[in-house]
Image 1: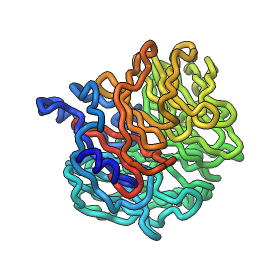
Image 2 (image 1 turned 30 degrees about the vertical axis):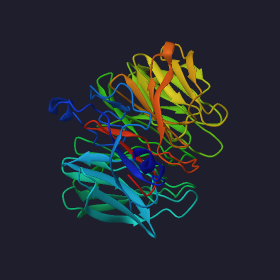
Image 3 (image 1 turned 45 degrees about the horizontal axis):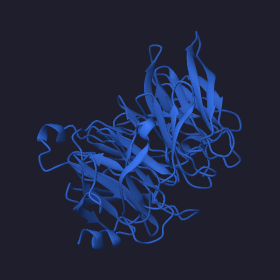
Image 4 (image 1 turned 90 degrees about the vertical axis):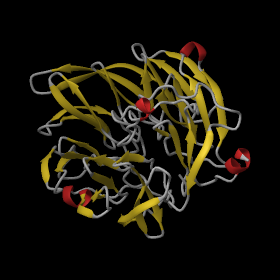
Length: 411
C-alpha cells in the first residue's frame, strides 16, 4: 500500500514519520524550524532519537497536501502552523496549514513568477507572530501568522533602485531583533534593514558599483564583538554590521550569469562561499580591523553547488556539485581537502539530524546518509515519485520527528 502511494506522489509535498513509536514528547517540543534551513540557517536539526535506518519503502507516510501550486519553497513553522508558498495562475500564495496538513488560511503576496523556471521561490520566515515572504518580483509582505492578514507590503526593488533579474528574486529574508534584512542590490543600497513592525527603512548599506541582487539568503553570526549579516550579491560575497549596516568586507563571487544561490557557511572565524562555473567553493579567514574586517582566502575546492547549499558538521563540509561533478563530497573544513565522494545520488540538498544526513537529489531520491568521511554512504533511500523528474530542488525539512518533502503542488 505504501509503495503504491509513493508511486502516486509526483508533484506533491509529503510528510513521513522519522521516529520510532516510543519517541518522547521531550524531544518533540525541541522541534523548531522557523526559517530557511532551520534556527541557525545552517541545515542542522537538533532533534534526536530519529530512525537509524528506513524500511525499504521509506519512512511511514503520514499525510500529503496537494493544491499548493508550483514552486520550490520549503515549509517553516510557528504558532503550531506550517507556512509554505506556491504560484497558482497569476498569483503567489502563502498557505498556512495545521500540523495535519489541513488548510487554515491562504493569502496572496503579489504576482506569480511566469518567467524562466516558473514557480514560487523564497520560503517564509516566522518571527514573533508574524510571517514574512519576498516574492520573485521584490514584493516583501508581512502577514499576521494566525490569520494571514497583511500588515505591510514593500517592494524592495522600487525602494532601493533595483531591477528584476532573469530567474526572479529568491531570498528567504532574515528577521532578527525587530529588523528584516534584505539584499537590495540596487542603485540605492547593497543591503538594508527594515522595521519588522512597519516596513520602514532603518539603515541601508551603500551600493557596490555595477553590482545587483542575486538569489542567496543571508546568515547571521557573531564575530569580533559584532553581529554580522553575510550574503551574496550577483558579484560578491559580503558582510555588513547588523546594527548599523556598515559594509565590513567583500570578496569576488562572479560568474557569467550573475547567479549566486547557496547560503554562506560560517564557523569559528571563517566563512565559505560558493559560486558555479568560475570561482567555485572558497573559504576565507576573517581578521578584525579598525574600520572593517579583512577576508583572506584560505582554500579553494572544486565544488560548484547551486541550489543545494552545504552542511558543516564535526569539521566536515558536505555538499553536492552541479555541472561537471554532479555528486556529493565531504570536504575537510580546515584544509579544503576532499575526504570522500558519494556518487549514488545526483546533485541536491541536505540537512543533518540525529547522526545522519537527510539528502534529496534533484531526481526525487530521498536518502539517509552516513556523514562519516570514512564511511560516506547511503544507508536507506526511496523515491517519492515514479515519474522522471529533474527539479526536486526544495530542501527537506525535519520538524517534530517528521520529514517534510515538497515537490511543486504537494507537501
